[in-house]
Image (cartoon, rainbow, N blue to C red; front, side, top):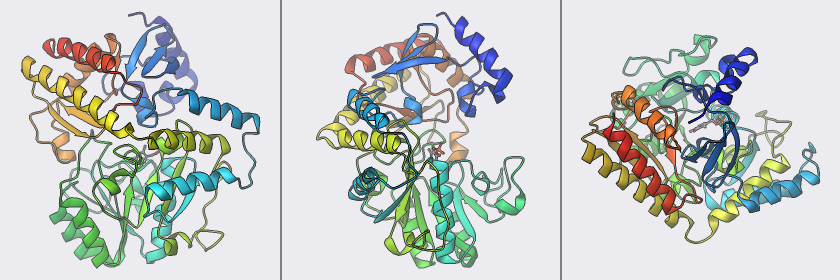
Length: 427
Ligand SMILES: *Cc1c(COP(=O)(O)O)cnc(C)c1O
């Protein structure tokens, strides 16, 4: 496979962009080697600048659930662009997207649109703090909620301690309000809440963890969080930036039948353009300016192009059979990979909820960050590079999800499984 042009561009990029990329994982540091520079994408395929093509399971880290450049979405964006790309004034489109979101996730009685998941989380936490008049938050190890200061805390190796910043530049003063507990560990969470609830505004959780590979919640975990937060005057925030419109149209909260107080969305609701959203019960959301005192604003919030892409994406997802098809393709992929691993004698722990999935290179079980970290990342890196050379684009890290789109065909899945059979034999 020719990669000269990508290599040249990566060298050039590093002269002006830190690490050559605008988001760290793109640089392939955890698997080694050099990132491919992408020239275009269509359907299930990515095409790089050297003319190679790949079946894509990263899908821009989740948003491209329809595959790349779906005709209806592209056309709608072009038409919207011709009408002006930003007004800094309200549009009817924003009502349309907010209404579609509320209909899909009824817990989001009111919705505020922003430009990224990070921004949505940050704003939701602000309103949760204002609403409860408490400063503390409780998050789970291995859950990612964007890169705002106080959420970069993962609390190092200690089981559950006061937040210690993982990142230089984040003052300890900012993270001291962040408590962390292991994912799926209700007993530890309960202890922490009982001890600290007077200072705790909220629990924030990815209802299906998608940033330490994929880790589904245990049956009692999310219900337990709902009960604990209710009993202690705290808000429950679901970060559904990945799971929203991914695991089914109504997201993880519909799948598991739990009503959070606030929900964060992003990724899919922008159809590949920058959108985030947060929303919840009216009495909470009415605290946001200008209806209330909690300030939050954005020059490009509710941007007409991004909102148009979101609306068109949701319209397509709403069609009957969409999630059944995603499920079928995902089952086929996951079973094929599992069989290949067994045949090759490679220990693999597979996790999956609908079309988000992961294969951890470990005996398992994988239920939290500590058990996820046992995965053999060197084996993953070797697997990843063989797959890449075979034209299969997986996430350049063991601890990321694989996504299937509506555009992946049974043939794509078969080709992927054949490549995996060869790669696993060769680890
Ligand atoms: C991607 C992601 C975010 C951050 O969204 P950005 O748009 O990258 O800022 C937040 N939470 C979760 C669960 C995510 O996967």
